[in-house]
Image 1 (cartoon, helix red, strand yellow):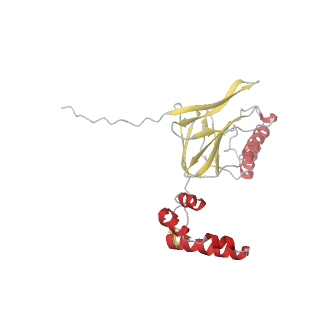
Image 2 (image 1 turned 45 degrees about the horizontal axis):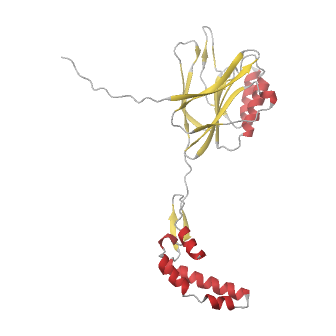
Image 3 (image 1 turned 30 degrees about the vertical axis):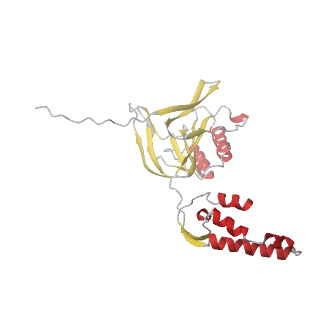
Length: 268
């Protein structure tokens, strides 16, 4: 007897390609890019590039997650490209992007960080240390028939968890790096504040109270100090009657415009 199994639709996540191409005299058209999940609010950053670094393949995007501004970059260094020039270009870019809370730098640096005796490994680690970034991948990311190396890096000042390296199809070539970042929204510490509940003022009653003030008497005073003192006492007395000061415990930030109507009435 055939058993029927209910078929459930699987969610399909659509990604769009965002890339930066440039002409390289040695290798033709090259470039880097991102696959960005559709619906995610991301903007491409235009970075002023020093003419010395125009050949460096890098691209930067920015987004906001849980109220935190996150800048993400990707870069590629061909094996023949001078490492110092490559890192100088990234340093120039990173130090110019100051309107952010966190950085994530991805890319194939073509430096095997598993080889601690290689001077280039020390150069890369010094570069990351100067920028307060950590390299979070620890397993090999590139494989050949006879070797394995860690050349694909994820560098960040965020806390990461569940960092895994998985083969992409064939065992030969680059692997896929999967990781999750912990981006938490800042928690507001509760605090007491004093305020006047302007939005509950009855404007008709407010107008009547303001009309009962002897404004002509105030204007007739010859002493400016006395005029200001009486004016303040009269206005505060009206507000104490219609919007007495209250104390409230604030747990979450909020903005309101209920007092705008009251301001309009005063201006009249």
